[in-house]
Length: 162
Image (cartoon, rainbow, N blue to C red; front, side, top):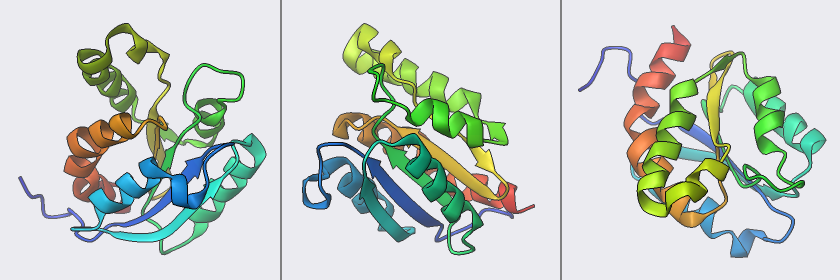
């Protein structure tokens, strides 16, 4: 269903957070990029260490960048001490899309069982930019992108521009 304010060709920034992966080894970030390419534009793609202050600085820079409609991060959403993405992103959000995390965990549960509860995937918005933070698992990224993010990107982006 198309709505009059839906935006086609959404511009996306991808950020992979990992202490171990390099750009060439980043299967999850590459998966996000390839799933976006048919209909949307990837304007930035970066891999950096899972560091809260650097994450906050990078996301804030992209929120201020007029080329960026959406920021998608992957990695750092689990329960280990190093996983700081959820708490860092949550502090930045003006509005949280609570249903995203709930739906992601519900659909993940169907695939991986109770381990889905360990995911702190989160989404929301800052000003006119939507932000999605996904786990680093390639399977989790595929699920989130195909089932949850891609179907709503045009409509969500249009809503945030109103």
